[in-house]
Image (cartoon, rainbow, N blue to C red):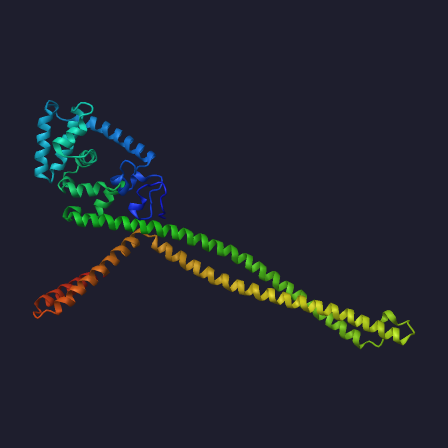
Length: 375
């Protein structure tokens, strides 16, 4: 589940719960916006390590270039890049290849000035083009997407990119549609991650409630046993007191001749027995109260366990990534439908009903198409 990332100096800008604590370089926002004063040391070390790996890959790519290209001048390479910038489209591969070639060719310290002055690229942008060449050169169909769409795809982790490409018709998408599809995917995954965490929390709560239920059941059983013993003791004392009151003379004082002493002894015995009975009745009342409290606690625990089980089931359902994606798309479709209805209401207020009728027809056709999808 996302949380506030106290490590990241960009947290205030990002304004979302972080899912990249400890590996912020994998966060597209941090990767794109980290700058002096807003960097995390260990992540920048990771970035430098990745750059070193990229430079090694660039060197290998350089070594794999045709022999005639190794004899080219930096001026020729610069002109090729400028020409590719004008052409666009598949030229992104040409730009990436030429940048790899130029970086290998330029003396130490001249790379950044050449980028800025000759081809108007920042170091980060240049690295992105080189990355595109390394990752897309074996997929010419993707190279034809153009720089904007290719860069959007590169924002995806490499291990997820193939899956995304297999599930989406990227070629026919506009850049905005592609970015929205990636955003929808990320939101669905975050929702699924949150739901998984909620499911784990719900399962933990359910398990705790089961444990609490066992304690409550044991408490209730003990309270019922205590009440039964108290009932039996009170009944016994009640009988003994009745018997004592009905006896002409207590066995313990039968040999006493003085009537007053006999009456006194009898009264004391009755009083003692009454005190025991009162104490037993108090214990009985206390046991009854404990039983009621235990039964109330059991009823509450049963309700909570039922709620926890329902929450666990709901969270388990939400943790399904496909369902999370469906939920995001469904909400977006609802929003778009509401917007279209708002526009339709405006069209109906026009004197000419042609536009409104056309919109109504289109919306009905859309509704029918959606209905067929559910068949």
